[in-house]
Amino acid sequence: MRLTLRRAAVVLCAGLALATAGCTGESENPYIALCKDPVVVTCDPADGPFSITVDAEAASGDVVGFAGRVQDAVTRTQREVTLYAEDAGAVRLDPEVSVRPKWQVTLQPEGTADSVSSVLEAASVPGASGISAGAGWPSAVAATLGDVAPLITALSSTALFADGGSFTVTSLGDRFRLVYVPAYTTMDGVREVISVARDYPDAEVLLEAPAAGPNQPTFYVAHLTPEEATQLAARLSAPELASASVPGAPLAFVLTSVSEQGTDSLTGTFGNVPG
Image (tube, rainbow, N blue to C red; front, side, top):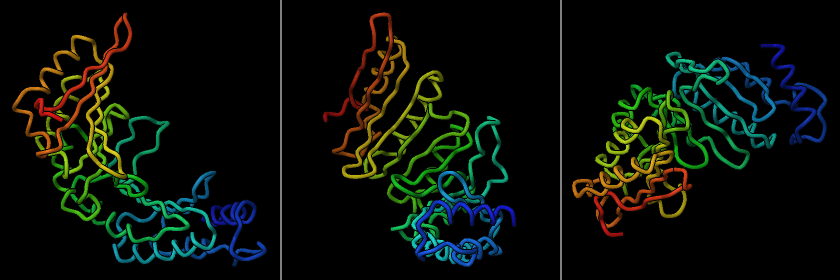
């Protein structure tokens, strides 16, 4: 821990414009004291954001108070800091990829630590992991495809995910992402997206929605064969899937296939609801 803190002092003094004019000792680095807080597990300076690992079992009030003090330091040093807690139950699938945290929050120089309490609330939901808040949608990671819908239902009752969020699955990497926006997509739509991902294991399955402006989602499926795209378009256009979206906001789909003739796309809406 002491060596880590010395390195932190060197990095901060050498590369950052601190609030004070000079950089003459550890007293000018606010992280020296912060890293001694009882909730801290490790303080590791990195090439990018300075990160602090927080005890996952620490009391919520203690973590929120600590985050407020870190935010003061972030404002002073004008350098973002990522707070995170390790997930003891996470499985490392790739030795070259870091295990997902239980939760993480990046504090910005011009921001506040207000989101920390809502992140901790979401992280306390059984089965929740990889809870993250920052720019864009809050995000969470499910263990399997079968866990996605129950996790969405559980997290939707929290303040952080009340308006929606992004959900991924550990074992599927970038092949699956589902942005759930309750104002536009129903749980019937969520279940169908998950079913498509299960039925087309070689495809990339993404339900995307912009975080700013109109949040109406679009469903993308890529790396299909032309035959698969045709079959899936018919499936998604079936009248019973009109329940995938809320009235007045049909859920659009874009299905991309590749053949010897090149790339082709089929478009439509769930349930063939007029746009």
